[in-house]
Image (cartoon, rainbow, N blue to C red; front, side, top):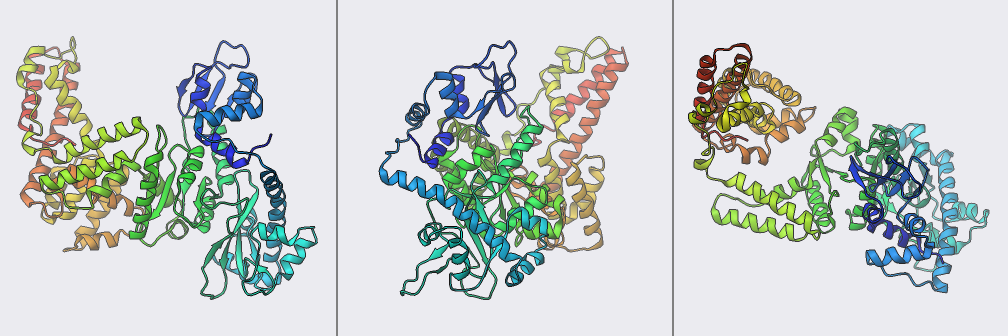
Length: 627
C-alpha cells in the first residue's frame, strides 16, 4: 500500500522521535541531541544518537539510520503500512483511503516532477538567449554573478503570449497539454482563445521541495506592466504555497553540514526566514546558507512545523517599519497555539526601509550577522506588543496589561509552555511595577558580618555571612549587567545636563564592546554638536553598526528596568540614580580590595574593619534598584 507523501510528512512532523524511541531506549540529553545505547546491537558505551530537530536517529557503531517510521519498523518488526497506521493513530491523523482516483493522482504527481524539471531547464536556457537579455541584465544589476544564477537555477520566461515556445519544447519531450495545465505552466483563456503561458516576460525563480525537486516557479515581471511584480505558480498537485518554503532544500543541506561538523549537537545553526526570493539569495551569498522564505503568504502553522523540523528557534527577519512590525505580530500570534517545549521563534528587526538584500549591499555581511545574532525571543516580542500598546500608568491600566498578557498565554495549547509563560510574565509585571519604597528593603546588617568573623588567611571572604555574601554577589554582577549599561547610555542621551557628571562619576565603569563603541561615538557626537534631540541622534546612527545597539538602549525594556532614564524623568531622579551606580562601582572596588586583603594579611581586626565598611556602604545603598 502506498501513502501520499504529504500524509507521511505530516506523520514525521507530528510524531516526537525522542518520545517514541525513549519508550525502548533510555536517552540522555546532550546538547541538541539525545544519546543512548543502540537498540539494534549490543554495546556498553552509547553510540546511538537521536536528533529530533533533523528528524532522524543514527548509530555510529552499527550504522543504523532512519526516521520515526523506520524505527517502528525495525524495532517492532512491523511492516511499513503497519508502522504508518500506528503512528497515525498516535498523532491523531486519519488514515487516507486509497481510491482509484487517489492512485491516479499519485501517478500524475510522479509524472509532473519530470515536467517541472524540463520546464526549469528550458527557462534556464532562455535566460542565456538573446531574447532573455533583459532578464539577465536585471540579475546582473542586482549584483548576481553567473555562479549564483546557476546555483539557484534562475531563468527567463519569454514575453510571447502564445504557447509556441514553451509548448513546442515540452511537446517534443512527450509532455501533453493536460500535464502543462496541471503543472501550472499553461493557462486556459476565458474568452475561448488559445491557451497561453502562465509566466510571460519574467525572471524565473524555481521553487524546490525539501528533496530538491522543482515543484513550482516564482516570476518577477520585467516590463512596466501594471500586473503584480511577483507571481507564483498556482496550487498544483505538487505545490501548496501555504506549506512550501523557498530554498528549503538548500537550508536543510546547510544545517546538515553544520551538524556533521559538530556532532555533539551543541550548536544549532541559525535558520533565517526572510520575505522574498532576492532576500534569500542575498543571505546565502553572504554566507547565511540556511535561509528560506514563504511564498507570498504570511507564515502559516504548516510553515512553522516545517521550520521546526530544521531548527529549534528559527529567526524571522522583518523590516523595522510599521508593516514589518505587523507581520512580526501576526507570526507571533500564529505561533502561539503550536508552541511546544524547545520549539519557538526569534525575531530580528532591520532598520526602517531595509530588507536583507538592500541592507547587506549597504552595510555588509558583518552588519547582517549582528542583526541575526541580536534576534529577540518570542516572549520579548509578546511583552512589547502588549506593554507598548496602551499606557500603563495607573493600577487599572496595569491590570489591563496583565489581562491582555493572560489572554495571549491562553492561546498556547501546550500546558508546560503555557505555565512557563505565565510565570515569566508574572515576574516581569512584578519587576516593572513593584513599589520603589520596597526595593532593596531586604538588605543585610553589620550583625551578619560580626557573626561570621574576619576573613584572613585562615578564613574566606565568601564567609561574610548572608549580608556580606549578598553584597559581593550583587556588586560582582553590576558591571556585567547589560541593562545597567544600556540605561547609563540612555541617561547620556535624555539628560544633557548630566553628561559631564556621568563621564566623571563612571570613569571606570566597564561596558560590553558594542555598547562601549556606541558610548565613544556618542561622546564624540555630543561634544561637537550641542542641542541634539533624540530624533537627531537616531538619524545620525541610522546607518552603521551602532543603529541596532542604539535601538536597544532606547527600548521599552530599558525604561521599565530603569525608570529614572525615561525621556521625561526628572533631572534629580536621574542624577541620584547615576550617583547610586557610581557608589556601587566604588563598593565593588572595595569588595575586590577586601578579598585581596583577606588573602594577604593575618590581621583579622583589619580585615574585620574593612569588611564592616563594605557592609555599611551596602546598607546606605539599600534603595538602589539592582537590575
